[in-house]
Image 1 (tube, helix red, strand yellow):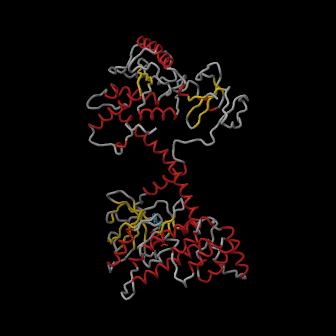
Image 2 (spheres, protein in one colour):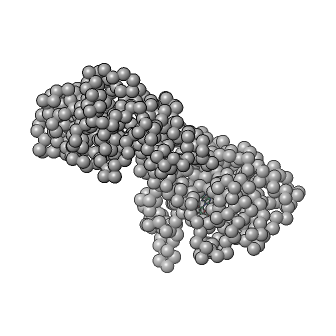
Image 3 (cartoon, protein in one colour):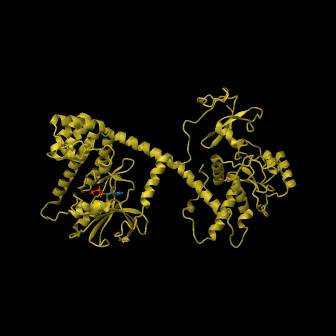
Length: 612
Ligand SMILES: Nc1ncnc2c1ncn2[C@@H]1O[C@H](COP(=O)(O)OP(=O)(O)OP(=O)(O)O)[C@@H](O)[C@H]1O
């Protein structure tokens, strides 16, 4: 198969001929009625038609030196053919191939248009079925399996946008009139739960409320856990706060600061944590009665007593039908034990391992929240108790709590972990899941022996490899997605530079600054990149053309292109290297007389040649 990109479709002489022609051509920007002045002082401008003709002649002869290309690469030229043929995949007259007598058809793959000649068949491509019945059988349509994209995948894009929206949420002052404007170094407080829900926090013994807030100086969002009406009587516990602050791990919510405040009109204790937008509690994710179809199978309907065997069969059937996939439960176990391992090895205990204090994000990443609160709120004042013994006790409680969380997940029921249900629950787990899972739960709930989180590692065994493999795959996916946006950011910066120069109404009291010298060339380049039209004057839009032009500008390749003025009276033949120089010069000129600086423009890629 003989194929070429549309960009190789034309010779420079034919372009100049077309430029000179009275009728608008596809590569000449649309004529705008309010004609702009020609370039008065650029040395490569030719403003009279006879001069243009002689240049064209010389170009054809290959006799022009300097800025005028004798044989410039035409790889940036737009196609000659109408794009409707492209959409229909129908054959179009071949104006681009080496043999104009042969018909060709074209195809758009990821924004790049390819032209195929019908006599050739590639050996390494599998032709797909021709869906267009009007297409003659000798034509084969080759379609890419998956349309490549210049941009981030939609899922990831939406996920990030969603998190951004949540991060930027502002409270309605009418709904929350009592919210203080500022609390210590934080403002823009936004409750993360209905205030009324925070009235009874059983496990803390104090009323508590979660807020999102923004740091006044850095603008970084945080999560504030407020313990209402709490007076700190003993500052000894602050040693724990320091330990928690130093503890960083991918499965814990980092504690950054603890302080007391009267900003809420009472004595409140505030625990400041990292904010993870879009996270929900494990309770909400797997045990919420708000979920469609969820009901706790262990919650008996006491109004109609049933025989025990009936209830057990019912439970078993329910668990089989609604059970969480075992790999997901192991995924959670690995993350939770990973967090507990680091906590216990730092001479700390979680003390709040509970489905309401484990948050989970959209990618199933678990994090222990609420760390450090128990050490402050429920600090042990009895000085006769040995600290090490106490720590060991709390760590053992953590392991029991972990066993209960896993059992609850395996039965999809928080009541399964109640003393009277545990035996039935374990039996159900034994029937629904592997013996490994049941053994792990039994080990964690077996309070007779002294347990350790490291003992769980052999029980998890080779499942670590699966977890690692999944993570690596996900990292690679993210890396791939990121690489697309890295290029987009680079192109965006070039476009920003161009936009700050093009059409600038006046600069340094010079009203024609944007229309003269280097800037004039950049203006024509802008038309060349973005304002192409087809033969019939309709816009010609091709992302591949735009991306390719901007990439070449970024690198400053020696390739030359013809730029035509809007009145078609001037043609400039100029290399991308010169255009890049003009862009740099003009932008530096703007920057040097500007009192502000465009944030992040220092990372402007102009000058970096290894980006392509
Ligand atoms: N670090 C965090 N980042 C983002 N959201 C969080 C963070 N910590 C908690 N949240 C969210 O804040 C909300 C309230 O958290 P909280 O820990 O009070 O849970 P809860 O279910 O209200 O617990 P309780 O039963 O003790 O009231 C939850 O929706 C939780 O997902």
